[in-house]
Image (cartoon, rainbow, N blue to C red; front, side, top):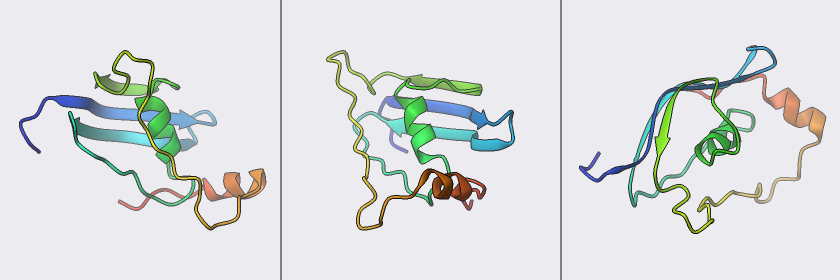
Length: 106
């Protein structure tokens, strides 16, 4: 990590669903320096979109701390590029929910 100021600083970030049974984000520590380019990659249902929703304040964490200063720089633009799934056919609601039972490998 460089000595650049942090744009995002998350410690112990958690977001659970279904009364705590689904741990979309569980104890995440994350530091992103100002100007740093970051990609989030993982299998379907492992919490990537939940993390982005937390980082952009679309959703609120259940626990931990999250501080950021450049996700929205005051001009109203949130600069996050989402992958649309590429060449894979879209999943049905049932297929997507079924895929969420697993967790991201560590």
